[in-house]
Amino acid sequence: MLYSMMSAPPFNLSVSASRRAGFSVGVADGEASFMKMGAEPGVEQKGKLFARPSNIQIERELEVLSRVMDNQFRVPILGWRFGLNPIIDLVPGIGDAATTLVALYIMSSAVRYRVSKITLVRMGINIAIYFIVGLIPFAGDAFDAWWKPNIRNITLLKRRATVSAEEARKARKSDWLFVGFIIAILLALLLGSVFITYLILKSIGKQLGMV
Image (cartoon, rainbow, N blue to C red; front, side, top):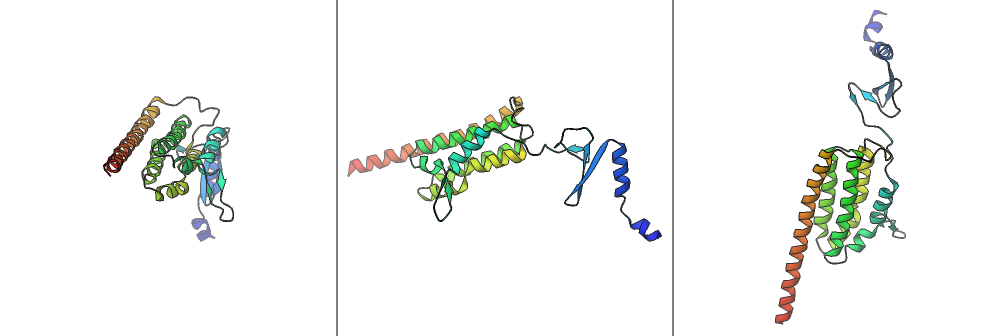
């Protein structure tokens, strides 16, 4: 009897103490979570830190745009899906620029949902990988169809958003400055590649003229 009392976990005492302090307790996957009684559902407090709200709804326009660019069409039998991105990318120079600008628009929209700066960096990396690998002829287009940067970034936005679509009207100035810095880097990369493509085409034109 004494052994069972000593070995019993103090969870019941924690539950009672938490309720007296004004918190409700829930257990999921072996982890206890605490939510302040009377607080808005979906806002949990684990220990001393509030977790982000769950089930955040983002603007439908962003979801539709990402689906059209990355998942709109389906290959029969194989079931592979692709969107307008690899099709637009086939246009030399202009195609890559156009699809990158769409991806940047989706990333900049994430600022209004107050995602963390590390999430914005991950979104920027997704776009950079899409753009850099996409410069490889043929193989790059196939990779872009598989990589789906907009779908990846929308998924990140859904997981990391901290305010709902109704509340996502304003963003902190520091976040806008941060995402502006990321966009500036990506645009510099874009302009640099366009300039290099121009030089290559110009060189090819001269060689053909000499022949």
